[in-house]
Amino acid sequence: MKLSTQIIILHYIFRLLLIYNLLFGFSGVAYGKMHRSTTAKNEFKREYPCPSNGNNHGPCPGYVIDHIVPLACGGFDRPDNMQWQTIMDGKIKDRFELSMCGK
Image (cartoon, rainbow, N blue to C red; front, side, top):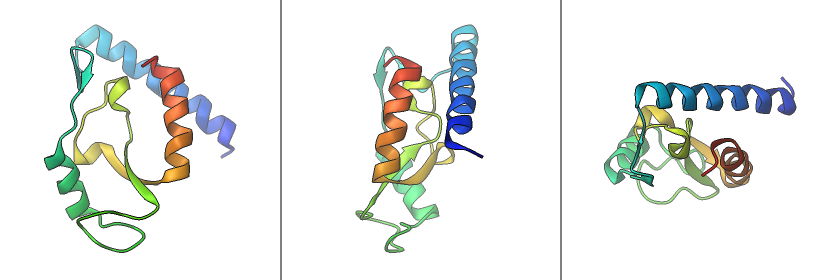
């Protein structure tokens, strides 16, 4: 699938999630402030070791932990909403998410 098609699909997914959150009040964001759980991050690392060095704790060179559905778009700060992502891919996704979620 082409990158432009993926971006369009993500755009609609984020929009639908925002509408759902507005209608039903579910969100990982409380009062406009994003809460990040160290416990959730550590649990994710235990379940999914670092792709670059195989460690399940400490730093992961070249990678960041990304929220699949961004916190700013109503995603939850739980291991099932996390994935490893290269730093470069993370920067690209962050820019896209900011434009879609308006945060």
